[in-house]
Length: 210
Image (cartoon, rainbow, N blue to C red):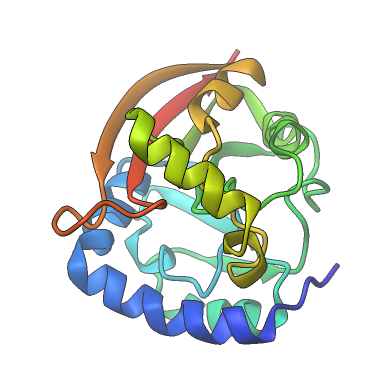
């Protein structure tokens, strides 16, 4: 199923290159470091994570609903060190069999899905028992002032201009509520300098499917 955001997809594709140069590439590499076996990446975007997958991965199914971003991900796939198949699909209805994945990767996607619980339930469904959920997301702030700014952004124009993105989601709590055990969690600000913005608070972590 396609979800077209023609203006956002063009802006995001350009911005992701600049963000990688500003340090996001290092976070992408940390996100997938040490993965092995069969991986499903949900919301693969324009494929900026693909080059970072380690050789222990036997294959990646990269799911992306936005047609322009999916095409860019397909163009990026030959540059990966592992086999990559890019498919159209939604986080809420992944085109993957039950228990087929050793790991699911979520990267800057849970901010924009309509229902985090449904998307995380799908991630849990396609993971084998004991499989890893790797996540890299911007999340609700830990300071009251920035949380107020996030709520204001979410209630006004931010989701409209950013393809449904919401900045004030407590994504770590949602991951735990979906039946995952969070085993590693790093909280940081990105970009690390300058004034904090609504999407500055980030998390990078690992959770296990019980």
